[in-house]
Amino acid sequence: MVIASNEYAALRKRGDFSSRRRSRKSFGNSIYPGMSYSSGGGYNKIVASYAKIGSGICNYIGSDCAFIGAGANNCNDGNCGSIIGAGYGNAIIGASSLRPDQSVIGGGECNTISSYAGAGENRINSRHNFIGGGICNCICGANCNAIGGGNNNEICGDYGFIGGGFANKISACNINNVIGGGSGNSISGNCSAILGGSGNTISAGYDWAGVFGCDVTAVGACAFHANTFIAQDICVITSAGSAFLALPPGSLYTCSGYSATTPFLRPVFIK
Image 1 (cartoon, rainbow, N blue to C red):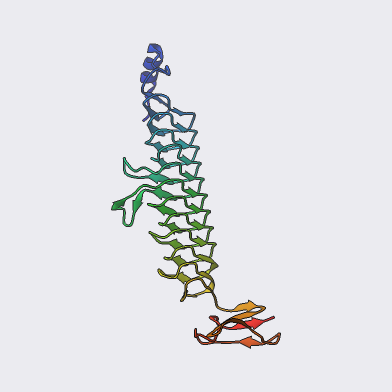
Image 2 (image 1 turned 90 degrees about the horizontal axis):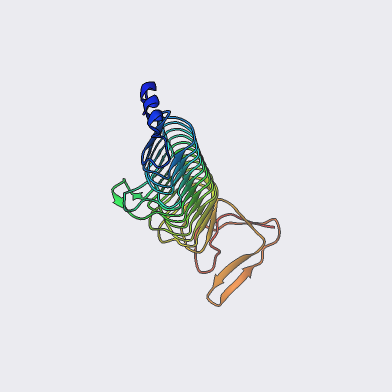
């Protein structure tokens, strides 16, 4: 809100810029109530206590103890020390009774940490999340997650991590999952990891699975899946128990699927 020069002069004459005022306006910045502060920029707005906007333009804080460092069009509506460092169009948002707690967006563009899950209809608590940067990354309705960067990555489960990449997703109601990078990878299980690659999938029911490669779909729990796997020894499960399959160095062992007497792997090169 811009203050005209005559209004500015009148306020100064009355001494209305005192810190005791519940509302302070200067150079287009608007602050309600007291104990909040904007040190620069323009058209920034704070409607909470113990909050600060360092600089920038058109930034907004709507909850107590929140901070925006700089940037433009950022919105911090998270509780208990939530921080947006800078960037453009980043948001920490949620329902009034379930605002995200103690969450951080370092920078980037259009990144979101939200207590809304699904299509923005279900509301659950969301806390202790981090997005380092990137574009259009989202942590929604989840706790204790981190997205390092990238583009259009999404986490909806708890205790998850996406390092970067494009359009990677960890689905809701799943915990302890990791996607290192790549593109179009998705996890719907628990305690699983996709190290990288493209178009890889770990579906529900295949917990403790690992994947690396291109268009690999996990087909078993507690197993690592890849397009090609290099190993020194192969453990074979037989009716008498487990044993190591002895193949000479340089050989290529191929199996079409799982059985009781063959390893659960596709092309394997023996060193």
